[in-house]
Length: 195
Image (cartoon, rainbow, N blue to C red; front, side, top):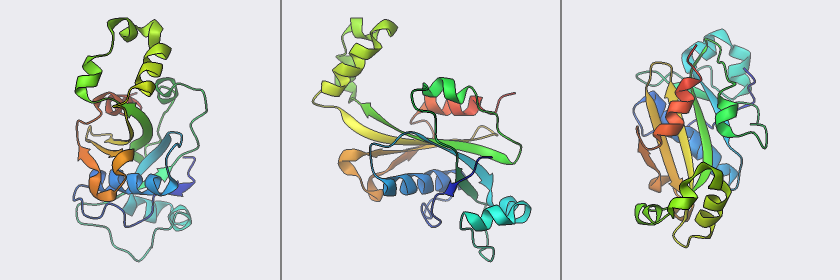
């Protein structure tokens, strides 16, 4: 793994499922970095295994060797190398192969979204693949657009979770979570574990 950073311990402690806690931890970490950032990819590793099998890495990313794991286990997000600029996200994800020690992965990415009524008003000619640039321009100029940060995590066993934060409501108490909030991105991340 090309490991450089972990999301700060303590973020997402109210959630009960390990994957939900990890996704919220990543959301909190990325929130502290500010907006207008490139996509970030994280490997998810079992915290207890990381402490026992890679103690120097655990120490480097700030895991307390004396701290016990949470009931039900815990996952440690480990930030990966930057995603190459100019590479489409789907093409980049198609190149990933994870080592066995990685039990899941997560991605955080910023996007513009429209409310359902505005999305329904997108002109048919802009929905064609060859008009992607024109569609992007239309969305950017739409007065009801919302900037969002999506953090999506998946595990090898198929479990998935997402957190969505609106830039207009940039608060830890306003983060929406759910299993099926960003199904396309979750599917793409799950595909990185297929052999």
